[in-house]
Structure formats: C-alpha cells, structure tokens
Length: 301
Ligand code: CP
Image 1 (cartoon, rainbow, N blue to C red):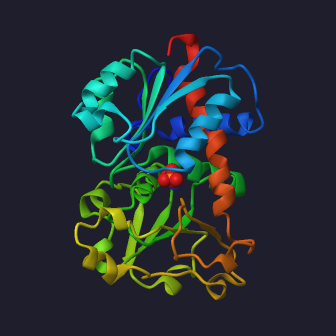
Image 2 (image 1 turned 60 degrees about the horizontal axis):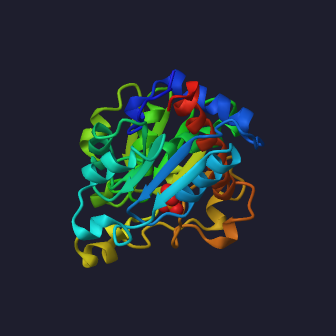
C-alpha cells in the first residue's frame, strides 16, 4: 500500500495503512537483517532531535541500509543561502529516501514536491509529526490490542505541539474514540484542526485531575518554548501542568509523552506502572523499520 509514497501528514494514511505499519512493526521488532541492503536514507534535520533522528538511523542500519545526514542549517549550504527546495533536488540524487525535520510549517509538503524519492516528515514546525503518531499508536496497540473505543486525554501545549495534531487526526480514523483536551486557554487545539476531526468526540477543558478520571491514556506534551515569539508569553504558561505520583496512584491508565520532557512529569513517576514514555520512545525503532521497509519495498525506492 505504501511503496514510493511520501508520509507528510496523518491525512496521507488510512486506517488500513496505519494497521499495515503497526503489524509490520510487530514483526520487525527484533529483526536485524539485510532487508534494506543497498538502500541509502538521507536524514535532513534542521531542528534539534534525539529520538527521531537516532531511531531512523538505528532502524536503517538494523535492516542493512546506510545513512547520510545534515544535522543543522549551519553545517550545510543553507548557511550560504541555498533553499530547501534546491537542497532536496540535490539530495534526492544521492539517496533512496529522505527524512526531513524543519522548523517551517508546510516545509515537508513543499520539499516532497521537489523530491523524486519518498520523503518522510519528521516534524514540520508546529504542524505535524506523523511518525511519532505511528509509534504512539503502536505503543497503545501493544498494550490494548486496538484503538476502537479508546478514551484519551491530551494535556499541555496543544497549539504548538505537533505530535498531538498528528495524533488527533489519526484517532479520528478509528471508531468511538473520545479525545479530552486539557490546556491553558491560549494553547488549545487549533479550531480549524478540531473542525476536521469528523467522527472523533472532542471535549475541551483545563482541569487535568477531572480529565484523567475516565482516561485510558493520558498523553502529556511539553510547552513548546521555541515556538513562542514573546518569551514573556512562554513564562506565563510554563509549568502549567505537572504530573506527580498522586495523580496516577490506583488509576488504570497509561501515561505517554513524546519526549523530551522538561518539568511536566515528575521523575518519581518514571518507575510507576503507568509511566510508559521510555517504552514508547523505544518503540520508535520498530515503527521506523516498518515504515522504511514499506516505502522502499520493490527495490526501486
Ligand atoms: N519525540 C521527538 O520527536 O523527539 P526528538 O525531538 O528528540 O526527535
């Protein structure tokens, strides 16, 4: 279903496409093979990353592919004024697939138009981060066996947090899912996005304690300091939510976070059975192995 395609937004994937990735991720968890031998993956990262960049690199190498990379604007010819479009036109001639992280919303969609090889959006500003969502869904799937009927509370910076934008779009593809949102008033889920979530029941609020009462998954996000034009506006909302052990004790829920965290989850929570964010992060390798395999299938990249 996926060979040769770009993965820019969760809108590019159907429920069946998500299930295909999740199923293959399960099969490839422990695989180290030459399945992608002869393939070359270009990692173009113009924003900081630990998990996404390294798990794409690990997934490529575990399946026998090689990687080339740019780690910052300053270390590339963009520092001399080269455009992203020209960079992509050049790099597509060196590789079979491009993974791009860039601070501008819409940059991945634009870049894909200049690329003759599949392009994966590894985060475009505040817009979307679809491969994070695929690993989030895989994590829930492993624990729960499916997504229909799920109740999720997302909390934190829902305005600038690209992971929750992709997650909300994905959850709308499943049956009877309820999404409760908790955020400071000025960091709510964008209205235009909420308007696109047909089939998903969305309940908006600002009370974290009340919202976890019925949640199976509490998905917390960092306040995205780097997206605020005015540092004073960031200071007003910094530290809005902090999960302490008392919030989770005795509750049958799973706490997830795309990471990195700043102060929104107390380290005391890390060893509680509800805290699944490091396991979630580890699942990124299996999911990216699956995605790379599906996109590079048939040997013609
Ligand atoms: N979750 C995530 O995208 O982490 P990185 O920014 O470290 O890649």
